[in-house]
Image (cartoon, rainbow, N blue to C red; front, side, top):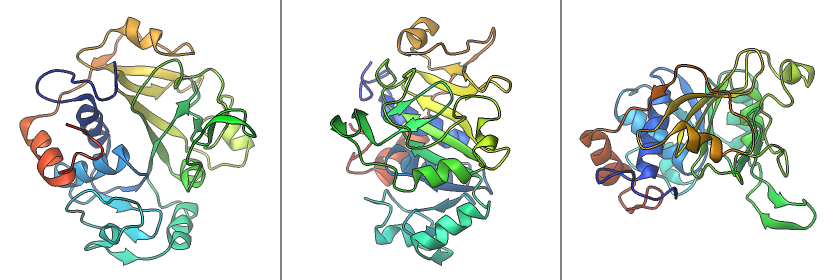
Length: 263
C-alpha cells in the first residue's frame, strides 16, 4: 500500500500516521522533532491531548505554540510564542544534558534494532540515492530518553536486515550495545510507526516487536513487508482511528496546503 493511499473514505494513510504518532506523545514532556510527519504529529498532540507538550526544533526554537506547520525546522514560526529563541548549540546542549524525553525522527531505512539510515541508498561513495543525511538525528537518537521513528512506507526496502549506512544508532547490534558504545543507559528506540502498524522493542532481545496493526492490515502483510523477522506476540492491538476533530485540525489548521499529509 502506498503511503498516500486512502485507508478508507474518511482519511488517508499519512493522516492516520500523523494521528498515531500524536497519540504516542504525552502532555508535560519534551519532544525534539524532525521535519515532516514528526512535526505534524507533535503539533496535533499539542492542539489536542497534550497542550503542555514542549516542542524543540533543531535550529533553536524551544516551546513554541504552533498555529500551523512550519516549512522547515529553522523557519521563524518555530519560535512563535516560544519560551526561548536559541541556536542549534543551545538545543543540542539541552539534549546532551539529558532534558529531552522524546526524539521524533523519520527514516529511509530501519533495521530490527531500530538503527536508522537517512544518509544514502547503496554504497556511500557511489550511492544510487543520496539522502539528506543526519542533521541532528544522530545526536537526538543517541541522547534522548526515547526515540520514535516514522517510516511512511514500510516495505522490504525500508525495513532491512542490514542498513546501507548507519546514520542514527538504535540498539546497534543488540542488548548492551548502546552502553558499550558510551551512550546513556535507559535510552534508545521506543516506537516505530508505519502505514501498516506500530512497533516497539522486546525488552530482552531489543528486536522490533509488533504492538498494533492498523485496521486495514493483516499480520501476514506486516511479515511480507519486512526484510527481517519481527517479533509477533500472541496478543497485539488494533490501532485506534482518528476522529472528525483530529482530521479537521490536520486539514484546516496544521497542513492547510496539504504539503505533507496530501489530499
